[in-house]
Length: 477
Ligand code: NAD
Image (cartoon, rainbow, N blue to C red; front, side, top):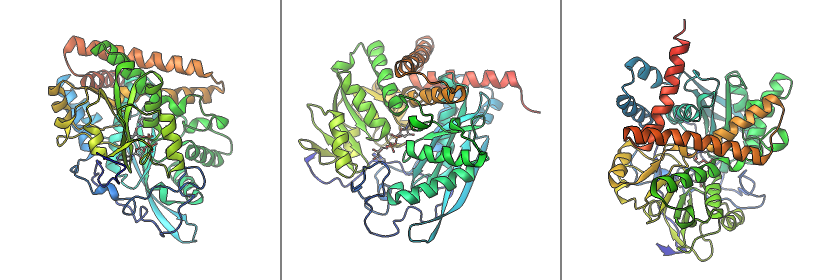
């Protein structure tokens, strides 16, 4: 680690591409990108990826398909719970997949064709629910994996939903605000026959935010001829969003981690050091809510690199710094600079991967020194890494439990929109904590009764709930 050095390498997941883009991730010009980033205040200069948005393909982490990981996790749990083979086969594949190629008029009047996806994994428990990702490395396989994980997460939280996920192959930082709006509206229009309050309800994910949900909701509503707020969640509060949704995922990570630290390790959150990979919605709110409860956040990172200070950071100051410095925390005064790889290997009590999937693999798992891994991101740990970490006695709080606060409050938002009756913030927090901790209790119960790890226990509960419902409904026709 060197003080204020430039970061040269990134730990990243390299996706296998099953449907290719079309140059959407290429910057059209090297010109001023000042208003290109919806996450930045106007006038802020975004940090530039080193090569047209594909910089993190240059990584030392080998290629792993997120879909293969998701299927392998399912296979392992299916074996441990003696799941019938026909049920396993049914759950191993998504129910519906949509690929769209659509044109967008860019600022220079040229037309660019973008590729997007929406995958609905399983509708047994209700309409599907899951985020929309804007990222240059989005693939159909990645959407399949993320949709499958959403199915387990919703079932584990006892929500009346199946899982879905969608995305567009694009680096949103390279689009102007007008282009981003146009692309979002056209993508929403292309997938509109597929989504709806009773069918499939999108939400924000990597590279998307409340503004993008507002454009999606408006586009869908224009098609219908009336306002349909319940078609997406994670909207601005002014148009039917829920109080508490913005920070729900991060706060949920903190609630779950605090409870497990206490119950499994007898440790108070005030006494732990924390490293957070990714400083977007999930990472920044996890860092902030942990800091507010007394934890020492010694390291954080984003796609440009990481920073370290053994005395700890105030995440609110980091956020303000990033807003004024092109969206990155790198260069924060008084910090040492480190790579994302180094951050993962820090000697801390709690490591929170909250960026992309595939960050902790067989290649680096034995170098992890944290006692607890709280999965803010979806799918950050490979099955091989899980085994290594288990052997080392590291407690991994699985994504479908750890980061479920977001979908829980998204569910509250959907319910509020459908009823046109809105709850106050204390009610949202109380109900979210209750739901997370009730399901955490169930997961802990299974670990105690059967001796399995937290991920296997969480998956077992989720899969059993879906299989029970499937059997009650029967196979149509
Ligand atoms: P975001 O776009 O707000 O933030 C992503 C952060 O990760 C940014 O700081 C970005 O710079 C950083 N990043 C991107 N690529 C990176 C890399 N290769 N190495 C290090 N950092 C990198 O996204 P988000 O909504 O915070 O989502 C983060 C993760 O959490 C994703 O796995 C997402 O699926 C999951 N998740 C999000 C929500 C939600 O409510 N937003 C809910 C549950 C799970």
